[in-house]
Every structure is written in structure tokens, then in C-alpha cells.
Length: 384
Image (spheres, rainbow, N blue to C red):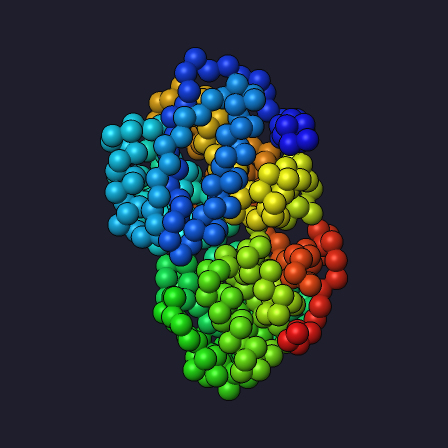
């Protein structure tokens, strides 16, 4: 069953058969352990499925896996090792924006192609780097699609923003404030919090007292769950809770039925979209890993799929691989991927964002309307 589905994915993606004289050697930097391991696991799963698919079509990839543990300094060491000791042609990674920011700087210095699947901090592709390529959207895109949706479904006047004090969180919160102001929303609360704290009640009480119409949060999965549990405890109940991807778009969060029902989340991929191979990938992923595929898995699959083809085209040469990434265009699980320079970005893919809402433990695509698979629950239906 799984094998047949993989062949369907390959056909849908339009692979051309290719024979390589030797395996392409690539590195992966990911959060295999540590607090971000749940989403790191999704990323690893997506990459593994891509490797199987590539091999069936004649591109054999030898992967050197590195665990950054969610720590920037560990990520730097991993990139140094991959580039100088392992002599890989290119690297897929990392997950968090904090790690990716420093890994990207190292990749540019070492002149090794880095394809980032999912880290969204604006500045990652605003440094003029020539060796760093990003498949995923940016925090501006995360905030923009959520606020487009919110102002379409409702008529909010005010917004409260709560983000973790990390590269991802600060960038996401800043993007939300800037876009909200452009849309005429008054920012009545904006505060950062220390990631991994055991109690956010005092901050959430201050947020509740500000009485925003909508609440925008930027968190990884452990904090997302705790924040919503404690929001329920204090009775915070705005028109809508908006989660900027990450922890809010994860199956682990959705399973928390008492606090996830009715929560919106921006996402880069859903099984509902019509991009090539999407439905086949979703089916294979769930059969293999016994849980729904996340956008983290899909973008990781895409990043490895693209980098491996570029490396094979360049015969394992780093500069030729970089050139192939720079000039190529691919129809993928994430739609058309092309790395372009625009609006201050370098090698940034213009990625279509979507919004899902968790309804009774399941993700329902609700925005944009032409890609929706169900109707939104608006306003927030209240706590279960």
C-alpha cells in the first residue's frame, strides 16, 4: 500500500528517471532531541519519505544527520562538521529560527548551499546571502494571512499580541503589529514572554484586562498548549485566537481537545490543496507514521527533494549546486517553488499561505476561500 502510494507521489511530482554514478552526500541539521523534538520529528519524517522517493527515481542520497538540540551554538558546530569533515554538498536545515539564523551565517561563510524548510524569521533571507535558500514563508506571511482572514470573517477593532522571546517569536510579534496597524487595528497589548516558563497566568490576566477583540500568539508546541490551558483557566475569550503556525499547527496541540477547539493557525501546507502529490503524500505519511502530516513534514520533504536534485545536477559540486538552486523552478508538494530576490529578500520562495482551524481535534482548511474545505467557527465558540 505504502509503496504504491509513493509511486503515485513520484508520478504526480513529475520525476524524471535519473541515474547517478555515486550517491549525493547531503547533511541535515534538525532538532532531533530537546524541547522542539516533536516538530523536529515531523521534519525528519518528511525528509525520510523524500529520500525514499528520490532513490526510486535514481537519485541516491547519503545523509549525515546532525542534532542541533534546539541550541544555536550546537547548530554552528554541526554546520562546521558537515562542511569541513563530512564534506557534504549541501545541507537541509534547521528548524528553529534561532538556530537557522546562525547556521545560515556559517553556510554563507563556508560557501555551502543551505536549503531551509521552515524557519520563518524575516532576517534569515534579508542578509544578501548567496548560499542560503528558503522554501517556507516568512513571519510577515504568517501574520498577513491570519489578519486577512480575521478581518474578512469578523470586524475586529483591537488586537493583543503575545510572543515568546526567541528569534521566531520576536519576528512574528513584530510582523503582527506592523500588519495590524496597516489594517487599522489598534494594538492594545504586546508582550514577549520567556519560553518554557511554568506559569503564564499573570501575563494572560494582563492580556485579558486589555480586552482585545482578537489575540495573536507566537509559540512552539509546549508553550502553545500551556498558554491555551491557562487562557481557559482565567476565562480569556476573544473573538478569535490566532496562532502563528509552529506549535498551533501541530498534531500534538490539536489532540488537546479541551483547549484547541476553535483555534486558528496559519500553515504552509494542508492535505486539501491541489498542489502535485499532496493527497498521495498525506496518505503515505499517515499510513507510515500513524498521524496526519504537518506543514513541517511537507516543507522538509520539499527542501530535500529540491536540494538532492540540484546536487545531482551539479554532480556533487557545491557551486554548481548553488547555481542550480538559484536558477531552478520546481512543482512540488508546496506548490511552485522558485527562489527569488524581491522586497529586500534574497533566494526567498514566494509561498502561498493558508489558515486552518481546529474543529473537534481535526484541522479544517478555512482560508483562502477558494481552498477551504469547511466553514470557520466564528467568533470563538467558547471553551469546552
